[in-house]
Amino acid sequence: LSSGSGSSTKSTMISPMSALTGMTSYLLGDGAVEDPAAAGVDLAPPSMAASIASDGMTTVELCSRTILHPLSVRRQTSDVVVRIPYTAPSTASMRATNTSVEAAYVDFARPACEAIKGQGVKRVVTVSALGRGTAVARNAGHVTASLAMDDLIASTGVSFRAMTMPSFMDNILRQVSSIKGQGVFFSPISGDRKLPTVATHDIAAVAAKLLLDPSWNGQGSVPVLGPEDLSFNDMARIMSDVLDAPVRFQQIPVGAAKANLTGAGMSEAMAQAALDMAVAKDNGLDNAVARTPQSATPTTFRRWCEDVLKPAVLA
View 1 (cartoon, helix red, strand yellow):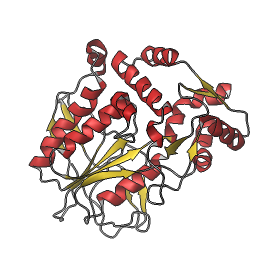
View 2 (cartoon, rainbow, N blue to C red; view 1 turned 120 degrees about the vertical axis):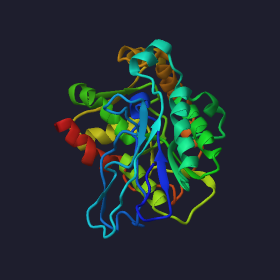
View 3 (cartoon, rainbow, N blue to C red; view 1 turned 120 degrees about the horizontal axis):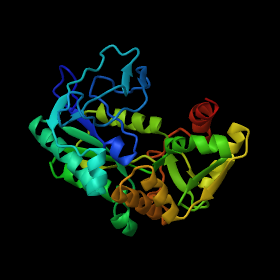
View 4 (cartoon, rainbow, N blue to C red; view 1 turned 90 degrees about the horizontal axis):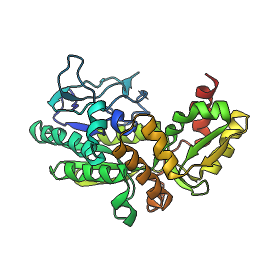
């Protein structure tokens, strides 16, 4: 749990373990910078939200690594790392016991909640998901588990903001090989379903502003919706233009998608949760919140393709 050195204010950011969920996780520290961009703070690549200690201790380490990298900040941020005892399931044990997605999210948050109360943390920001209050959110896999995690954290009484967001543009990097070699990318979601999507760099910027702002309190959500809604077919056209090579989208059956996930080593429960989330998104999970100037973020998919996807494909 990160706190600004010499400050009475403590903030932290919590996200499920990347290794278990496949999500990109951002951890940021508290500090003296009010506007990261204006202060010259570089938002660096994402780091793991949790890791098992190299000495074999069963601990979860929550810290602010690499996201706020001071370039020209007069008062640089400093961090305090709190190691919280936690028996984390190994990948092998998760496959063997078929650990549920809710256990992966909620059990991860339990020791954090204990630390929030024990360490006097004043504000918490989480990476969460859209869909709260919708009918499809009840069976939306990772989204349902994310909302349960938020409820657990909120129950501590801490001032709390859940950054609710759609799928990340950066998830497409998982399919660089097929885009480069075959000119195709896949999803069980319909190619014509228009959905919001957001760049992880923009998520980090929103989180930094929340964590470094001491003025807010209470509990609520902060939608982070990107600048536009796009379908996978729209994305294919943009990728084709940016890469100067034909790229197409191919929808795959849910059963085939699940077989691909379990074949790659994902547990039955985690694979099913991923597919439940995709089905919920295809049924409008991410379309329930209207974009506003406050919830829009600047990075377009075209810009992301130019800055991130194209270098990855050409590498």
